[in-house]
Image 1 (spheres, rainbow, N blue to C red):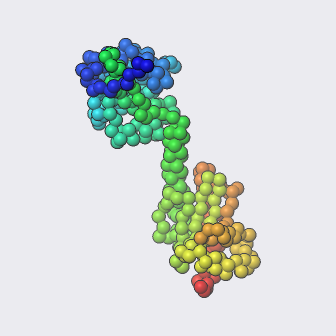
Image 2: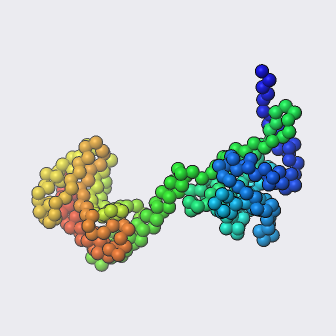
Image 3: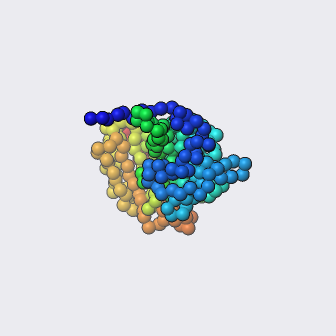
Length: 311
């Protein structure tokens, strides 16, 4: 059986000059790269001018969208990364392909980040190229896709964008609530806007706090008990729960008592889903007034009782 091994040889043995040899060869054999990427590429122009620069290959895919290919027969560097971004923006391309003999981990991370953060119609690929031969056969390039767009990457990117948008909305919501609260109560007077879905308010006892809560489908306030010890947390909760009827009568509404036996902390919650939420900005003014009113009433029924608790 005459089976020979593939030999990896220095890329410059196969292509001594990047522009004159490799880019020219790739122009004539673009299908070799296309197959590895799962794209149908057609070269429109080699060394297309982009201001004072030239993109190695200016292509289009099967849908007619512009694709740029930047070649580098050496380890990836910042210069070529900058060129890649310059070309894709100035040529209004939908896909950028960076072919290099070795992609630094830092640059690979950038390509992945670009796929996460740019729109779903924009794609970036990092492709490693090696020269191979079998025995005395002619040299041939071997392309390996190291990074490219995929559904998981896109999903992660969308989740990050959604999270960033929520952070901005929360900070804006809390800023408005704190400004409005100053005219009615000293509770939360020293607090700053948060990017979390809750905003803590001191009860005067360490480990026991009130919280404002703003969610994507509702809002509320709660009493959060966590002094660092599960047994003590449950004991505090039980002492308050023993006065449940009196507390709810004074508060004027039923509360949601959550002992949470399998967790360290315990909670008492007042939530509502029909007054507005984080994404209904037109209802924020009314919602903030309701939440401040709830917090004032919470403090009125709980503060003295919390101070009297004995452990």
